[in-house]
Image 1 (tube, rainbow, N blue to C red):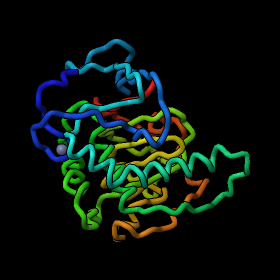
Image 2 (spheres, rainbow, N blue to C red):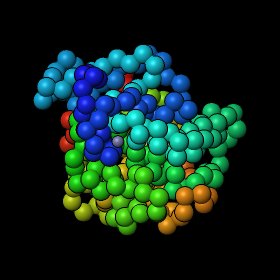
Image 3 (cartoon, helix red, strand yellow):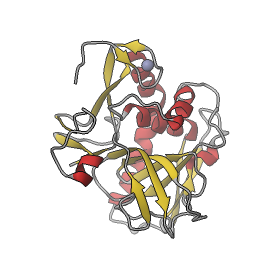
Image 4 (cartoon, protein in one colour):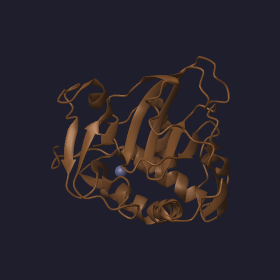
Length: 258
Ligand SMILES: [Zn+2]
C-alpha cells in the first residue's frame, strides 16, 4: 500500500498523509503476525484480484489500516478507545473465566463513547474509500460532541466465540425464513459487521434484527454510564452471515483474519 502520498481520510474526508489505525484497538487484544484476507476471496477462492485491490495482506503486529489522518486517529484513541478496550476486556474476562456464565447479565460502560468508537473503527477498517449511504451517515457523528446518533442507525450486538477479529463491510443479505429477524419480509438488509472476540456488532439502518441494540442508549451524554444487557440466547450462528438462513451478497471490501 502506498503510504507516502496524501489520500482522503475515511473519517473527516480531508486529503492528508494517513496513519495506521489498529482494528481492533491495541488495548482490546494482542495479535502478532496475522494474514488478513478479503472475505470475497475466501468465498471465491484464493489468489484472485478483484477490482485491482490487493485482497491478502500480512501484518506483523496486529491489523492496521492506513486509512485515517493523524488527527482522527488520535481523537479515536483519546476519546473512545479506553471505553471500548475496557468493555471488550471485561467481556473477555467473563467468557474466559472458569465460572458458569449466567443466561442474562449486564456490563457497565459509557454507551456514547462505546458507540462512537465502534463506528469510528468501522470506517477505518476498509481499504477502499467508504462512500455508501451508511458510511456517509456515520462520518459526521464520530467526533460530534452531541449525542447525534440518528434514530434510524442501529448497532445490534451478540456474543460470538470466533477468536480472530473480522470486519465485514457493506453486506447485503436477503432474509430467508430467518430466526434472527423480528420480521422476515423478503426485503434486503444492508449492514457492516465488526467482530472483536467475544462480541460482534452489526451496524445497519435496518431495525428488524431480533438482537440486543446498543443504540437504545443513543440519548445518553458522553460520560453517562449504563448497564448493557447480554442475553445469551440471543445469538447469531458463529458462521453468520455465511448461514443458510440468509442469501448473502458480500461487499468486495470485507476482510477476515486467516
Ligand atoms: Zn481525518
